[in-house]
Amino acid sequence: MAEPVSSGPRVSRIAQGAYLVEGGDKRAVVYVASTDEGPWAFYDGRVFRPAQDPRSTTRVRRSEGSAEARQTLTAPMPATVRAVVAQPGAQVRKGDTVVVLEAMKMELPIRAEGDGVVYAVHCEAGELVQPDTVLVEIAPA
Image (cartoon, rainbow, N blue to C red):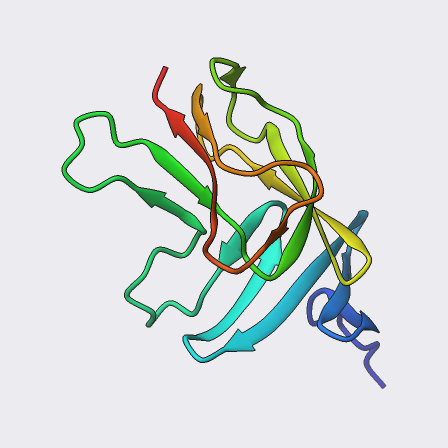
């Protein structure tokens, strides 16, 4: 009899809408939800939507008609702003945490999608934000 072959990562539900994904030596928490606009998943500071969704697969929106193409980071779900890490004028690099949200008793870091300078911060610690609320704008460096 052949030995079973691993078919991919293991997924365990750890709370409503929260899953632990384990594969090899990596572990990650992924949040999954559905709204009137469709399903989405939050992982590593980014929101992913199904490929057939005409919107971006991340929660970063580029300013239309702007030569600068600023990054607009938005809240992926209803949450409380736990901390604002980057202030206007601060240099950020791709992957840097700029805001930390809390939802479902878990921290959700919102990360810069690219290098740049924080142009504006539209939230403050303790504030309750709704999905798609603009939190931070980042201009290219």
